[in-house]
Image (tube, rainbow, N blue to C red):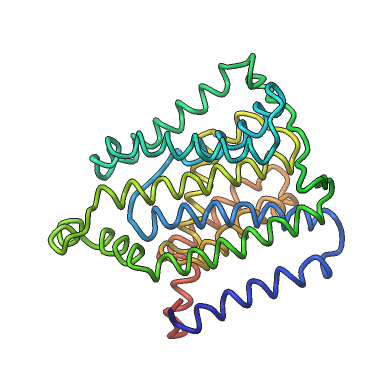
Length: 310
């Protein structure tokens, strides 16, 4: 792997280490936690969309499964939060593996509609099973305990998500530089050519879809415990679109683009709050401008401009 790729990882770790000491108050610390959570989800989604070239418009559904597993299992069945988180990830992996094969026989708009339908089905199920999930009103989530220690404030959660983000970036960099990652990029370039050189395209599509879904499920559980409450909004269509937008704005097939996209689109709604009643319009205009002037995303465009790769 190129040395400068690891230099980027070292920079991310350095920023994460310094950030809590320079943030002025708990509001910004909370925002940093949410940025890091979104960044991990978008990293997994970018492996699917950016590197493998497979669209998913229902990814928030997997986020919702993880979130509700961490709410329902401890509340109704007395499970330990870590066990519930693992069960949610396992259930997500099984569901993703079951639906991936028929879904990925489709291409283009048909594939997009199939993944959208999957996300909508999950969202509807969470809303309708009110006796377990609280229905449209949602439900509280028990506190997360680690080794007898309860995570109870923003600073403690910050260090947890900072570690998760660092590990996720490291794992993603190594994955895309491995034979598996090279197969994904070949798949994105041409499925026919990939088959000719012996790539099992169905197996790789299913594997990356499952991996990306598990990323989302685990961070859904983390979000649920951090916020202390879950609602069906975790799994709705608009959240899925928001995640895809983070991938596109930051840069598809770019690990660091995933981080930039997640940071920008998590922070923008807060920064635009001063445009009372017009924040959505300004937000849309910014996204349009990025797509017109930076069509490949922020990080790939800037890297090409200054003559540097990832």
